[in-house]
Image (tube, rainbow, N blue to C red):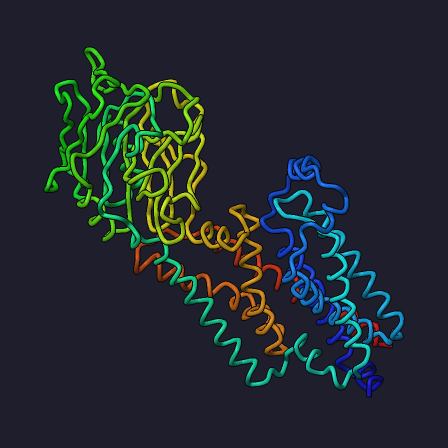
Length: 515
């Protein structure tokens, strides 16, 4: 029966499918073991400075749960690699030897690579991973190819059973709806309405900022790039903007109370709680804050929180000049918060960087699980116009009318970060490859047609991303998440490479058969 399958017309198709599936399995394994891809020699240096003996370094990180997980993790590799060897009529002894060498070699490479990552390496992982590969190989060896048809058909599902079609349909629905529903995880549903608006410090007084503030405006809608350039050129905020919900001009005649000039009632005035740590600039607008100053709203900023929870957008516009570039904490410039661990939003300074924290279900109560850090090298050289925008998870900072390169794009930053893939582009692409490849693989073998594979397979990968993006952009006004779209495009390109590789292989095989 094994020889019948090996010498059948489908032999080459099965072999190529197994080769591709083996390569994809290796990609999955490397992605899952090397995330978040933050390679640095500093991790190895810290590991060597830990003071652990060789035995402690190799065995101290053992967790009981890791042992069965590591074994299961390498079983697919053993199954697929052993089956591809069995299709080439290798003996049982050679198959097991090759599978063992592949398992221990691959696991060793992964563990050595993890020394350069914020992860831990362990000798036990190598042993358990190798055992998993051998278990998969042994299963293939003791079964006939006829008994392994389920595995062959999984590698090349050209006639998928109804249960597989049902699972993939459900998976497609979950992926598409997941990309849409994640939009609501960046809303302000977990905001607290009882926080006070603070300027130049945290509400607890232990994150002081030093510098001069000239004007502050808060909007319930993100400002466009055109509006920001216009405000920078005119030198003041748009007092007629319909979305202006708080507006302060820091002039000497304000004395200890800074009036909210927005037209929204009730007014949210600010009070200078520490008059001895601030002084008004002579013959020019602006309030200079010394270390330990405290400017705080006279009552809770309930009106701000309630309005912003309806729009899930925010723009903080401020004219300022930091006293120096050595402030850290980060030092709070503007903050709607309770203490150092609970806030709705904060714009702060950390050295040459501006920090922007916004609270939502994905960033946590402190808004710090994912925050935007943007570098500006002229932070203390002169008065600056700074705008921090938040639009349903997309965050940007503008300085003097120009957007800084660093930004949060939305779901492509939040979801990979929480999944442990980090915020680098390679992490975004890797996560979406893991999620979208099963769809492309299923549709690729759904029909044995070149047109189907060239046209439909890439669409099966791109559409679950594009359709939610169209819905979010057109219906909900969400900015396009280009890193997410690009990562889907990369996965579709991989399938196009597979398609054309198979076309070339078929032509080569056809030419070799011709007399």
